[in-house]
Length: 443
Ligand SMILES: [Zn+2]
Image (cartoon, rainbow, N blue to C red; front, side, top):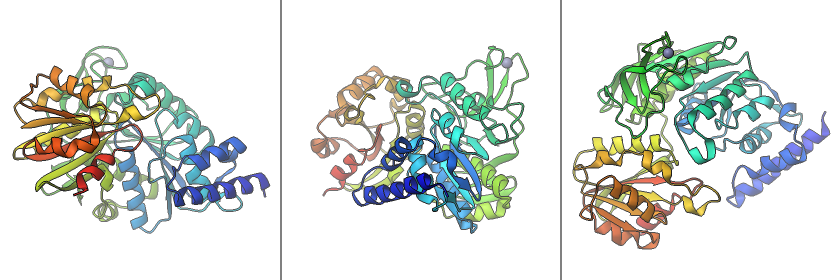
């Protein structure tokens, strides 16, 4: 018995218990444990398989979907459901789940891992399956551009040459993570009614082939640069998928994966696409059938704080949480544009509150121009309201459409100056995005 390990794990559990009671973060206990015993994660033993999920977009929802389906099938699962995906959050999750001997007794450990921290986590955690959903520009000030993130993820994979990779056959940057040694599986999704033949997003992160630097051609796009691709010069192209989503029915919320119909509780392109990724992971890691996957997926709901719907002022109001991520905000705009009726888009940015992440240049990567002529009003609120308003003005909107209010407490009045259903795009670096809901729901 490793006494130091037992004591560290116990201390982590105790701290985590206290943090939960006090409503504190899930990173702290693990961070303290790693300071006291930096090698602690290396000492843990696992009864089951370890699945890691990364990507610029969708890793929280997808890893929660995977954990949900595995549990529905009767497996025991440990996961970092709340998305504490840095080394310290992972340490909290694993130490809290371990017994006195440092053994994690679960059939599966499902970890959402940050792209840039994967290489540290993979050093200590023997990952069996690694799902890379996509790589797009995301929190560039913190992460750097997708090419730099690619190098970091590739470093992580190099530490685990036996780990099975699950790769997106319609995302040319992350598909290039395939190695000569790691076994790999691929997922893809057929063209849908929302697919386009040109990129409608504000950004396109892969216009040239990562192998030969010639022009990359796309047969269609799902969103941003995700779509069926082939290089105009070399043989780099969308890999033949092992798991393929088709017959995507947004109205009836279903998708067919490898011939089996899967009913879901959401209707967005990225969640449909991520469902195919989750199916690839669940079926290959556990050997479950597509029918079993479909049964589990049918009862999965996207976390409420990511998509909340309520009434304000007698108007339908939908709040969508995104990170400081242009692709994610672009997706939210696509969703808004598909909704019928008169509408107002509210942009709520509050990241000035947090440490070093004050950059809002990524707002210029979002195609707000697409809202031209399609919305009654655009409301900018929160303490970055003026920055957002400048961006919206640059997109060609005048004072007839634009409303702004940087005092969150007065935001209700600002909302009353607008017309139609309300779609709030709440973006934040580290929490507090709920503040706008508190204010609006406080009637
Ligand atoms: Zn090429």
